[in-house]
Length: 166
Image (tube, rainbow, N blue to C red; front, side, top):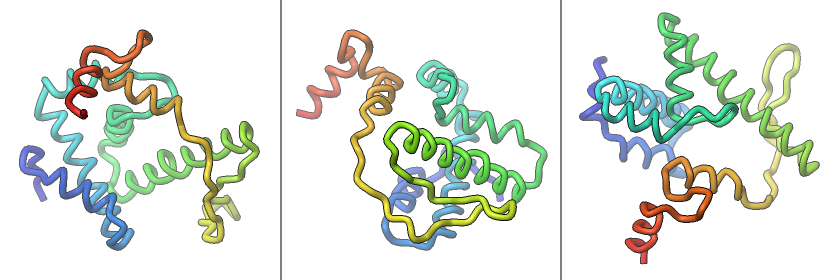
């Protein structure tokens, strides 16, 4: 199936992903299609790729659309099923485990959703999330990444966005 990034229904895909309805397997397929469409859109539009490269700089352990696309491109030539399985393990499960370990270390709060048993990851269905403090630092970093905030406070772009919101 050929993918035309210009014709892809990005908003419909997003609505499906954030909806409380729908089967997980269907949402997984939509997420994969969305990632492919975004990757193709950056390949099709050098202006958009340049803006993304400028607006989403590499920040070590921080992840963005560009870091994920770069990861996928390194796996080019692999079977799609293998690439998706590796992505889930490396970019989702291991990342979640790293974040959970940081939370356990800093806040003494157990948030692991997976455990490793007999060389397999097992989903812990009995875990119930608990309310935690807001994620202020990631929020500030996001606002800086999209040029709404800098070290001096709101940027001109940020002030314009605030004005439009009122």
